[in-house]
Image 1 (cartoon, rainbow, N blue to C red):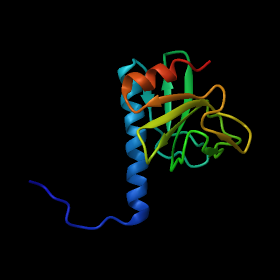
Image 2: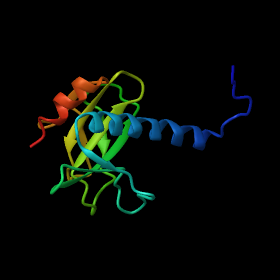
Image 3: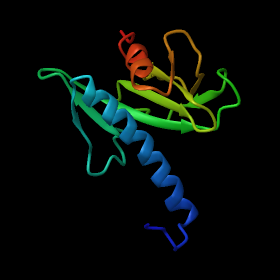
Amino acid sequence: MPRRMTPTAEGTHQALKNTAYESIVISWLMQDGWQVFTPVLDNGHQTDILISDGPNYHRIQVKTVEASGERHPIVNRWTDSHVNVVVAFARNSNWGYVMPAFTEPKRALNSPGHYKFEQTKNDFLRAFHQLD
């Protein structure tokens, strides 16, 4: 049985975990019928995932937070970008929020217009489809 025997650097380990959350969202959106694209490098554009239904494109930023509860503030790190949707996962739990990108410096996860989901495909898609 394969077993990893080498240590992973802390920064690398966090990058791997963040990428895993992006991969989950990609999988769920593909199963919903979206065309999904991933930028080679999103530095400066804050776009982790680009989706299309054919004529329309939407930019998605995926964030993870150590949330102490649903009122946990999420910091806007996509200012001056064209991100449309933010997906935030609570790393220390099994839920997250889907929200339209906002312009203020930070907002609570459970702000009006933000939709909570349990970390399952069906619950995520239910929340995602509620976005205006």
